Image (tube, rainbow over all chains, first blue to last red; front, side, top):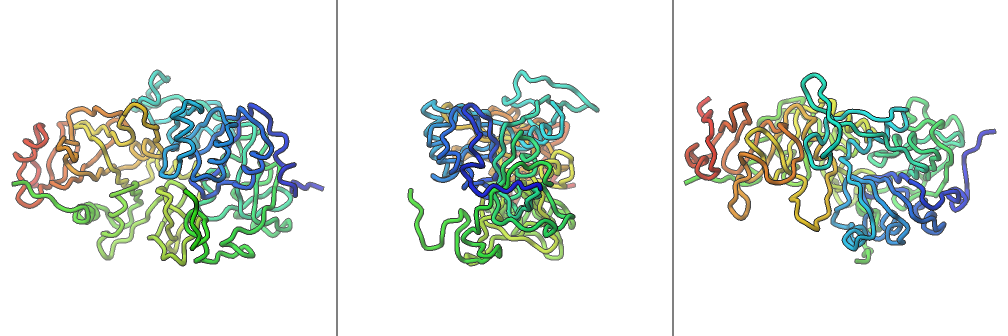
Length: 248
Length: 216
């Protein structure tokens, strides 16, 4: 029987080794697989290259991983945010390397890696300092720059529901980088709120089919989603409980 | 004396030029004001690059959902008929030329339509580009919404950009607090000068030759 569900989150990420390239889903905090990231911090793998849209928010999740000093390089589109003080400090101290990629090129490089395309021409960034010296070619009178696919050893993703076959559904804009990253990594690990029986997910709505997924880790309902149903008025946009004060 | 209009008035002026049925991306900051000024009777579809069409306004505090945010990472809502899609599809919407209009802020726009809005190139600053370069080259019409002059009084409409470029020859129009400029093969054409503002005054402020199309 196929069963990709791994109940022990620490076991689920135990084979991430030193020097690995790890994709981490999410746009800001939406879709960030915080539980998997916390397990990776406990696990202790170092010298990591992280591929993610942002470079951490506040002190949790990706920011905490960076703060642990185990990340050598970040590949992302938007590291500078109002709450990205962890990355800011490391970058200014010269303790972390940054490869800045325009967001559409970043995700297309990920998509290409998962779809067997080693490189492609894109109009985004032509004539900008990011692509100084890159190969440029004209098609139909317009210039395009050549960029290479971006594969990874592991992808850590947050989904909403999954079944034991690895089929994953997402919730609202937390879908963001999940589907392309799931295709681009050698090993794809998805944390979900709930595992449902095979057949319970509508086959017309499976953004990530199980073929792209290696491990499913159920982490339980989030505060504003008791029993998987959205309940307003409990948290702010960062997922911080209403009425509490986040440190900083 | 040149007339200046407020941010809200400028958003309303720009909104007049967004046709019924348009697919529109509004950049972070002042451009988001345009959504509040769409003329009654027009239906537009807002795209947010983190993966949604038919994005609605901010929710009240009791309906904030951390899984439902815009490109500025603020809480938003979904309108009936909304759809969610992944990042690759969302940026395909831009690059593939499917958006009718995007509205962006700017540090500088050149008279050939080059846009600089992502980096001031200051040493020691942390570079961050996000979706700016994809938006700039992707939409059918790229509208820039900005003040004509910086706080220090320097023109933001220039012969050539000094700041690092976001995209080349990509801007269609610039909506400023003094007037509206179309980017043409011959340079900036003034299509609307607000209030008492004259084209001669705009030329003096910018130090550029301008084409007068205000009567058209």
